Image 1: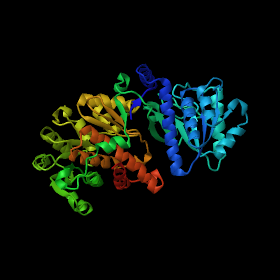
Image 2 (image 1 turned 30 degrees about the vertical axis):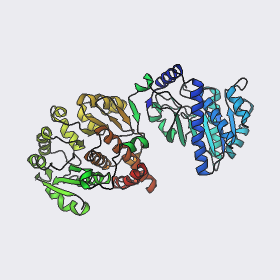
Image 3 (image 1 turned 60 degrees about the vertical axis):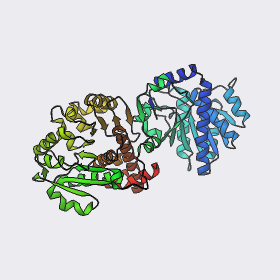
Image 4 (image 1 turned 90 degrees about the vertical axis):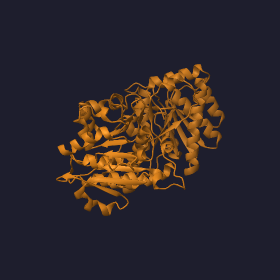
Length: 516
């Protein structure tokens, strides 16, 4: 899925129109695609009645096309029009010919008709306003949304709300929302994801997010110029390595995990287990020697390299041992739970120039990198860096406020400057490649706001890299699976407050199975 601004989407539609796909055809495709998704939902849930709140713009047109299609398919349909005249409107005429019913807001001041529609509807299509709105909302639109919200709040079984392209009242560039905006259960966005939908507070009104194909022609310059994608299941599924029945453990590589200290014993274990869960054939744990007695029984599948240490932190002289033990390794992770001791920084500094295999840097590994002059030039292979905003601040010298205000710009700038893939964690994790490509994970959940979840993500990335997955694709796939696992864990537990990193890890297999 592509991410667009409102002006970019307008330019795409304009170019499409000039190259043979008219605005009317795009609306027809959008409405039919919308209706097909709704119809499938109806077949799965036993639903057969729908009301559409229809405005004067293109979203209202999409909604009328969908309602006509659904009426022809046997659904009971109602169109509630606001600011849309019926005289001479071909879409209105087509809908009426299909057997649909229409009520004008102007003739329903007490919302009696709308209440009757909502009481008998399984689905409410919100097609009142589109991407070109200006806040605050004008009188009629605000009144209709306010009235609908009051009616919905009083219903024992309110309809499932589907937003057409975007929830009405959302600024699709900034993410700002009108007070009257109805929260959707599902937003079906046309052709591409509008960037405001992945910003707060708009994201809280979006619900689930799916794309509707509007039949754009191939080869559009304005479309090909888009550089930001939004990860989805189809994208990630294509990145995952095949599991051939004739495979053996060597087929899926060896992930070498350099992690842990006496202060952070669990980080290494989470990362190592995650590398296995994502499909690595073998995981070697390189840890300070005192940790082995703690870990061995908890990860019996791993092999172990016990490193020299200073008071439980990896010592400088461990660099030679690690480098001499990488013959079988196909990717290496450095960082989870290492701690901030100077001796560990020296270990990393000595190891950097000699690393010739795919590498992932996380957590304390990133903070140590920040203190090594020219670190990004010392790495011979494109690395994956997984900073949270605080670690990104340490690496760049920017403030947290600056990073959070311009997350995509920060990730993209430094991925290009450093020559490595940056995974800027947080709400809507950003993955940026040195060549300018960028992908956003469309998830923001407090279920992942827990110590250890970053270690799980790092392990997932190195596990995919160990299997030979491309550096950028591995980062995207791991970040997507990690985010979905967080959502899944919260659903199982019943609250985001109680999700532990180990719960996220335990949910990874379920997400992978859904992608296969």
